[in-house]
Image 1: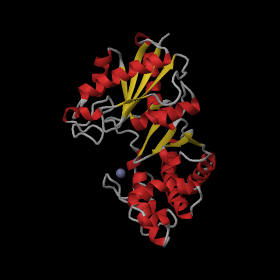
Image 2 (image 1 turned 90 degrees about the vertical axis):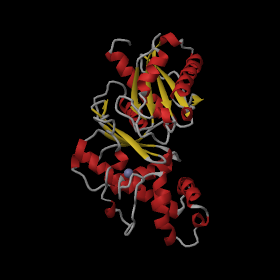
Image 3 (image 1 turned 180 degrees about the horizontal axis):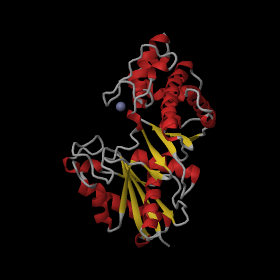
Image 4 (image 1 turned 30 degrees about the horizontal axis):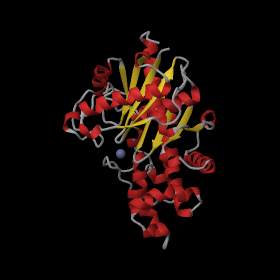
Length: 338
Ligand SMILES: [Zn+2]
């Protein structure tokens, strides 16, 4: 047996999966190991290797049977997996600055390693879940979490871009002034831009921009009585229960996403639009309502494009590891290892 591995390195945990030559995942759900990324490259890479052995044992796979590994991490990093010289929130240790994490893991494991950023990896899994392996389709994925990540799969391949910023969709500007019921809102993103997708479609956006704008319109609402950081985290559950203010928060997010998807439809004429992330990990009824609101927020389309499907990414918590494994599988097939 030969398999490939997917390794999703996050700030607190590493999640693993294994995938065989028939494109089957050998691990259901999460297979986590503490990440130790705060302790710098040497300790973190050893920890990743130790965790991979545990994952392989769990799946009944010998380490020699793993022919290639896909790694994904939060950015910023180059398309080839060299972390930013300026560091980042997830790689604060000084030794991470400018570190080639793809090459470092390849040396540690003695196996070929390919790299994706976490948004692109999740997008690749979402695409695979809909279209299967070897697809030639095009899809646009948005992952709504603390921030807003995503990815573009163009005719089956991840668009990484020259500098690794391909698919940084959260910072694309949208004509937010056309969202009904938000007159006078001033949505500033952490990146400094006014009115990009993340400034209206992320947990941070709820806390910094949407709740502060809407709460004064709902005098006496219970979310106005708690800290806004805590309130932002309560909104999804309350929206799922039908609370009008919380629904309005999600309607604004959905309409922002609709405007963004419209830009993508006119740029790529894709086969599918995909949405995932913590924001929509809610009841199926809520998910369906959210998708219909995204559609309602899209300006009218050409007849051919009006019915474009909008999908939800399944198994969201395993998306990064699965996407990384899919990329590793492609690499293994192209280089004759599979
Ligand atoms: Zn931004």
